[in-house]
Every structure is written in C-alpha cells, then in structure tokens.
Length: 196
Image (cartoon, rainbow, N blue to C red; front, side, top):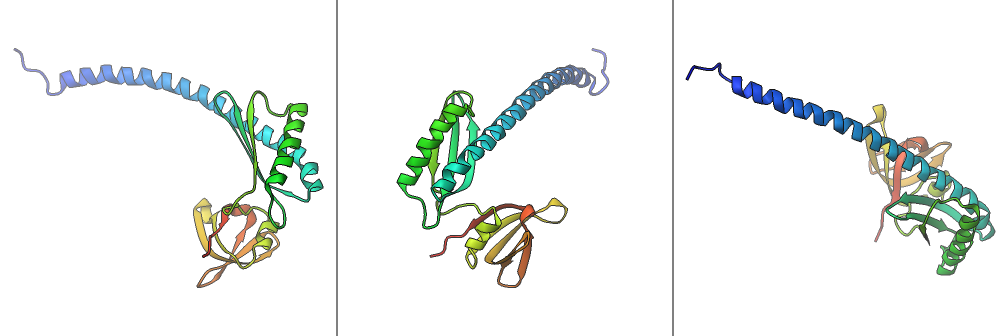
C-alpha cells in the first residue's frame, strides 16, 4: 500500500460533508426566509387585531367608567386568543368583565376584526399589573416597583425602589442610595412588587 498524505482521506470526506452541509444551509436559508416572512405577517396581523380591538373598546369602557390596561392577541393553531385586561377605581368585578365581554364579543362579530375563530378572555390585570402610562405611575406613588429599561447604549438596566414621582416624560424611582430618573420611552417593563 502506497503511503498517503496525512489527512488526505479526511479532507476528501470533509469535502463531501461540507458539500452536504452547504446544500443544507441553502435549504435552511430558504426555509428560514420563508418562515420569517410568515412570522412577520403573523405579527402584523396580531398588531392589526390589537389596534382594532383598542378602537372598539374605547367607548365601551368609558361608558362603564373603566380603563383599558392591556390587549394581547396571539394566533394559535385553529384559533386565536384575545386577552383584554381592564380596570377601574376600586377594581373591576366579575359583572364588569362579563358585560365588557358580551359587548366586545358582539362588536367583534359585527366589525369582523378577527379573522377566523378566537377565544375572548376579559379580566382584571391582577396583582402583577404592568405599569405603562404616566397615570399608572402617578396612581402608585410611594409603592415598591421594579423597572426594566434600556440604559446607555441600549444595555438593559433594572431599577428597584419606590416610585418617588413623575415629572414630564420620566419616572423617579428612589432606591436606598439615590433617586433615579427613568424616561417612560426607555421603560421596557415595570411592575409593582408585592409587599407583605
């Protein structure tokens, strides 16, 4: 047997595998780009439904002295899930949720905002209600909060303390050492901490 160059067979085999991997990459990239397009379309459809629901809910909630906390819509297999979180001073009751659910369900059927089948859930935001607006922060002055925000150069920052105030477009959070000002536009997520 004649001596081979070290690694010759390995290089040959690697070339075949590389070719297969290369072919897989092309297929994968085609698959990924098609699925990215579908995912982007789904996100646009979900945003469209949320916008439509928010517009329909305005008059319904204001007539009942309630406010919209959040609308969530996710397309699933066979049907979508529409979650609506409402609140009012003193809290919402089961009757409030039922009334909004009936009215919104009728409006959604008439306006045809959601294509296909869907499940509608109307509830209160619960104890872990997200804080999003100036009004949310003002209503909870002095309460313990955790705020996740975009800091300098887009780096995530987490601030924990008490809501000390709201000035213009910023929220002041007092920690043990200092008072930090966080712009509302930079807040990614803010929730009250449970205190016992």
